[in-house]
Length: 527
Image (cartoon, rainbow, N blue to C red):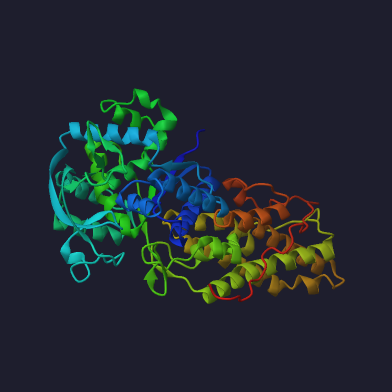
């Protein structure tokens, strides 16, 4: 039986500067989602990458006295190094400066142009270079500044190629109405409908003044506008893996895309600031080229510091490598996925960070694990005893067996924080169970029934922790694997085994050869 495919993309991050914690947050979430889908038995494929063209990058490279390509190569390497540091398990890294991507974009351009959806005209308007987007005067601060980047917009006049976006307004509206679960969180759908109500305008998809980009076919004076280029970065790596691009042309383009195992994407994961490009521009582009549309779009919130969005332009970013070095990967991944409801904005506070991580990873989980293993060692020689009859209908057993299904419900809705909270609710149940039974007291009694009750308690808590270890792995791969190794497991178990109770075989030796599960964090100097 073939595994079900699951294809998730992160945004293609803009390489005008080094990656910040906002980019890391999105990618950690994407990694957790894909790892969880693999745990469920799916063929989960994660694509991340970088957007490398446009005027902002051209200007940044010039200010550094390097070529745009050299600048992109340098910053792209920093993204790749950070993803490795964060233990991001991606299958493809998309670069929009690659020659293969450029070929796909040019063929796509020709296909849409042949459809009659690309034409030349003069454009005059207000443009935010930081957003790489045109702005209406009514959405600007004081009529002149971008509300996101707080930078002054520029007046822009050029003869460009336009994409007939307005032509697809009703088709996009119909698609959203026919697919009510396409946009998550669902309240973001109202933003998209509001844009449609305002009326879509055709938008320019080329630049004459920007040379760092993909040339328009048969018009070397113009380069393709960054969004019409970058959005295809979700597709071009799949095509180059599947077919010989020399055989690709505008006529067979749709057929080639439809032959791909992973298209359309199961989900595009994006920041809310680029919702319009994905929920409007991207849909219209795919409709024009007659390609299958993505199944889902999730726009998450911003990470803030001191109440403001963190960003390169504002200069208030937290350097991911610094907090990873200070607190460790497990703590970073846990805090951002647990403490911030996915889809909403979240503010970083070092004090809240330390308190949260210590409370859950060091106290609730770490202390429970060490107590149970010590009790097993002191009273049962670190072995699961033979002839032990565990009650499948006990509360701890039933909660453990049903835990993966409960977590899956939250993950289906991209409620990553609630999924983690459900796991730790069960950890709290295990702690409470251990406190109520008091096996350390029962083992001291002479009666065999008391010792049996204590032994059953330890065995049930260990079975529960085995399930917890598997379910925590997508969120914290290092910590999850550390727990699994204590159970003599070298990799995550199959989804079906999470419902096995008991799984641990008699005379299985369970010893902690991994050291302290999670070292408590002391309050250090502030970031």
